[in-house]
Length: 146
Picture (cartoon, rainbow, N blue to C red):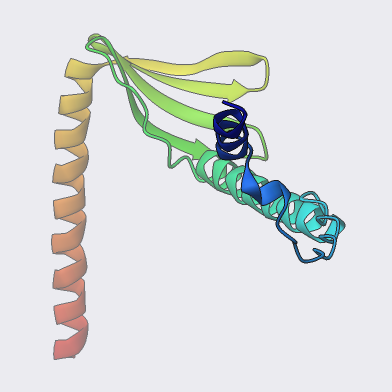
């Protein structure tokens, strides 16, 4: 019985305890994941991305590349800068065309006109332009003949 207990005891004991193990050299301490170099590189990349985003936003605002939304009743026909922050805007509102002076903090009506009268004005100016063109052509031909 004692023999059986000894065999059972030997089978349950892990034999690795009695094995000789080679001395392991201690692992060097891991370098910090957040090193100065990687932090500098990350901050520089972030700053570069932010500068690019700000530059694109400034260009879009400066050159009015952003799409303007139009509704059925209000439509911006034309817009031009007359100063650093001042603009002249032509707006169609229903059947009325307005010329507005826009400055920071204020909008002034410079002129208003009915759209139906704009058609007659356009036809008159086109007729005057064609008459002027004809007179100019005839005067050039007369000068060439002399």
